[in-house]
Length: 402
Ligand SMILES: Cc1cc2nc3c(=O)[nH]c(=O)nc-3n(C[C@H](O)[C@H](O)[C@H](O)COP(=O)(O)OP(=O)(O)OC[C@H]3O[C@@H](n4cnc5c(N)ncnc54)[C@H](O)[C@@H]3O)c2cc1C
Image (cartoon, rainbow, N blue to C red; front, side, top):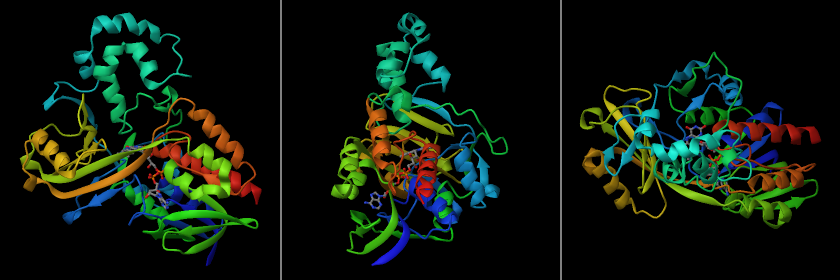
């Protein structure tokens, strides 16, 4: 049995931000992470010769005030790199539709339908509507299904149709102009979670899943899949919703009931490097297929390399690896042998639907006054910054309890 002030289940940006804040306040912190490395959706694959590519998140913005503060606190400001502009390219089967970003929409939209629908934008309210209902009413139902829906689903790497409309995009008013508008780090975004995990006072154990929780006097006992027991005064769960519900279990039955109402889904990422000379496609692309077995693909040319290019394809669940490989090689006109540093990663992502806000309010009500926190990318929103916001505000809440 080991004792810590704080135990965190889940070593993604949410869990590590919480751990960092707790350690900064002088607490001893243990982070339990099921995967072999911490970082979660911040997952940078390093190949030989220093070339790297992202399996998950790739872009941060200077409007991510909390995240940029973490970058500074970890001493990583000098590692920040401006990203080259990435262009959205629409795929119709194997064909790249000419034009990018707005030009693609102009080319693919049915304008008679849009002309009837666009005036509805005035005064349109997101509240109580799904993404499909809200945006479909603005651009027209067919334009949504054929063009806008696939674009919006490419962003969260899953169908966004049933998401609450208010959850997808956020306008952040403050920008830290000393950071590039859109940036990554010299060694990829995982440099940040790696640095958070190295902070003094934070101990990270990888390859360990939290499996159960029990209340113990004024604190908690957390049991891991290898049977180890850890005691803590504060417990935070920063995993996808299904795993969070399993860990919270009967020790926090009412919270578990609310967390269980949030569904999640799986995205299967296949990524690889390829010699630049073998690919005959434009650089810096965010590929959006109209209807395909994958939701989106991104290239790493936003940090250009003379020798290598790389692609990360985010597939829907239900494909075999052979099917994923066949799709990618056909689309890019490559042979399997051309794909180097081939890497796969399965990620569990929350799938919020209408009524999500009420669930979050209920979780917050049930957590009030307790040293128990539920964190993740399904509270403030889906982005890295939303995770940082949630973790910091939960640490502030718990620290105030004393
Ligand atoms: C493909 C992709 C691209 C993205 N691109 C961007 C982007 O460009 N910009 C942006 O801002 N956001 C982006 N996002 C969103 C953002 O990266 C995520 O929302 C955020 O990183 C999630 O962090 P998290 O810590 O909440 O969850 P996760 O990163 O999912 O971390 C949860 C961790 O919990 C671990 N875990 C699960 N169960 C247990 C258990 N029982 N015990 C212990 N550990 C457990 C998991 O292994 C995982 O490491 C992207 C997401 C994806 C998937």
